[in-house]
Amino acid sequence: MVEVLDLSGLPVITKLQPIAVSSLGGLANSVSVSNGKLAIALEADNKQANGSVVVVNTSTLSVIKKIEVGALPDMVTFSPDGRYIVTANEGEPSADYKTDPEGSVSIIDMQNDYSIKTLTFGAFAGSLPQLAAEGFRIFGPGASFAQDIEPEYVAISDDSKKAYVTLQENNGIAEIDLTSGTILKIRPLGTKDMSLAINAMDPSDRDSKIELRSAAVKSFYLPDAISHFQLVVQLI
Image 1 (cartoon, rainbow, N blue to C red):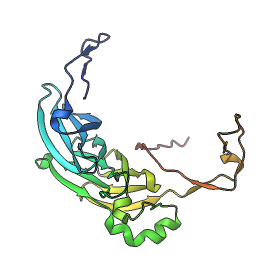
Image 2 (cartoon, rainbow, N blue to C red):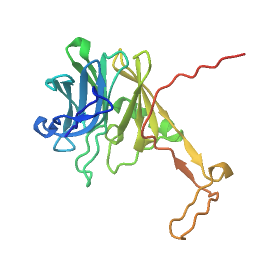
Image 3 (cartoon, helix red, strand yellow):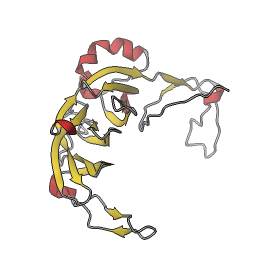
């Protein structure tokens, strides 16, 4: 269910008829709005099957288009120029790992009749030794490189040319060229050294107290949400 609120009479907020996404074949994970269009990321009833993006007219709440994407679209967003819809498709495995779809990123080009490219990560499998040395994590039992990648969240550059996708469980970020529809690189995030005083932590939840201290371990960052910003430095 996607709730719809009418803000035109602020400060009065009117609750309108919700969008029943179950009738569209799935569970809503994320929404995004641009130029009178609402994009809904729908997880399939079978979590390991391909999901979809439903595009809805925000004025009439009528469905404009339904597009199949990768398995478990966890996040959806429009590019700032309104041309692209991008989803991070987590490809989460079943609990017993007997079914493990490949994680992917889908790019929908609305200017080209909602054409779609769904990108997977198998081409980077040969780079695993170098990526792992820099903190990238592949760990699923029996999973291939492409199956183990689990995209989580998307941020898009202000010029709408690149997307940056967090690979949470893998401890990395993928950089994607939206114009060519290609994955440019994977950036491992390294590890956090908990032996440094600045990174002190409370390593126990069994001593009924808060006690920050250093520990001779390293941890992964495992990024979830991501945002794009531009830093402007003014010299005086």
